Structure formats: C-alpha cells, structure tokens
Image (cartoon, rainbow, N blue to C red; front, side, top):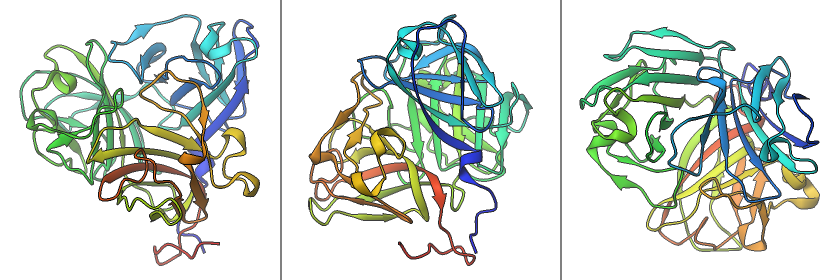
Length: 353
C-alpha cells in the first residue's frame, strides 16, 4: 500500500502546449487551479517566467535574471480552475512555439496574513503538498523571521526580491543556512551569514540576514517554500563519481516527474531541468533522458547524449560524466517532484521496477 495519501498530479503537473498567437487564450489540462506557474518557451531563446497568485497574475519575475518584478498585460492574464489564460506575447503564446508550464498548487487564494515571524507575511499554503507562497517586506535587520505556514521545517526555499535588482537566493537543507545558491547564475554555493543569518528554518519561520537579496529595508520579497513530502517531493544531494556508465543512483521514493540538478560544491555549472513530459522523456523508448533546459539561461531546449539520466520508479540514475551532473568528488543538489508515488506503508522506498 502506498504511503502517500494523495495523487501527485493533483498538486504538481507539467503542461505542454503550442502557442497560437490569439488574444486571451485559455489553456486547460492542468487538472487544478495553479498558484505558481513557471513558463519556458522551448523553441527559442527567451526568459524563464515565474508567476504566482499571491503577487497577482500580471506580475512576472524572470528566473534567469536579477531584474525586479515587472507588470505585464500580454503574458499570464489569469489563473483558472483547470489552467490559465495567456495573452499574445511570443514567449507565452507565439504562434507555433512549444511552451512548457510547470504548475504547483498552494491554497488557491491570494493569501492570508501570518504573524508567526517578526515580519508579518502573506502566505498561501498547502500543507498536504508541503508548499507555501510567502510575500513580505524587508527590514534590513539581521535575524528577522518570516512565517511560512507549513507546520514543518522547510527543505527548500527559493526567494527573490520583487522590488530590487539582485540575485535569486536558494536555501537547500543539505547545504545548510550558512550558504546560498543563485538560480539565475552558474556559481557554486556562496558562504554568507548575511543570507539566512546562519539559522536553520523551523516549522513556523525562516530567518533572514541583512543581505539585500533577502532583506532589503522597505523592499518587497517573495519566497516559494517547500518541505519534503514522502512520495511527492524530495530535496537531496549526491556525490559525483565521474562514471558515465555507472553514475550515482539516487532514491527519491517516487518516479520523478520534475528534476532540477545543480553542481553546488566543487565547481561552477548551469542548473539543469528535466521533466517526464517533454520529448517523451521518461518513456521506455527515450529513457535515459537527454532533454534539458537551463534555468539560469535563455537558451532553448537542448538534447545531448552527454546529459543522460535514467528515470526509475523510485528515483533516478545518472548516466553521464558531464561536469553538470557527475564530476568525481563534487556535490550536487537536486529538487524533485513526483509523477508517480512509490513509497511503502512503512515509509521505506519500495524496490525499483
């Protein structure tokens, strides 16, 4: 019997569609009303575009840029019960363009006030899926705390200053609160107490330092906060061994439907994003996967035999010696969401099939 008590596709889904250039186009098939959507034009060099229901459908942040939040009219126009409405902007709905949209479900609202931290935040939280969208205004003071509403310690936080031009900041529990990664560039972890104040998040709050990336005085910020849910999400790390034929095997406890990988210790490299929807990725005929996008770049979708990952029913195996995935002795962090659960009733991962 599966340990998970819900279906992953009710809380995360990858939707692929082809643009038609028409105004106010309704795109359906997500299966729920998304609260956070990450878009990328697969065919052309264009930005990674992130929208959420707390900031509002017409507010965009660019995952590959330091740019502040922008207000747009012809990109995302609304979140709907089974998808979203897009305008005529080329990267979102250009005629003939193939577009990927990764969708997460929070509370289905614009959020509510949370006073668990020293800074009052606005939170849209889904404790079942272990996901919350958090907005707050910085104070500039080290040691400020922000409520996230999850009721469990976060394992992954993706934060961006909305009103400032600065890097995205990533907290990963395997790296710790004394370092950070930047989604918008290829650098390895950066050691700085000014990010998370060298304080691990708790079941109610995360702590921020004085760095402007995360705590600009009077500046507005957004954080996408995740705790691990067995059978649905896993945020871990692995050590590269340099072998293209027998690379690391990583147990997630589910078949990954979304997989983000970053070389975090040992050298610089781009972020790499794979999913089971694009180019039959994950099917027997095309497994191992060779299809990828780079979230820190505008580049179009790529495919290469040097970027192979075998997707399995309880995890993934790296079949590459490329530095982006598997340099001997280097540490990689991964961020995975399930397509299918595979966790036993005793909470131990089941055997791969």
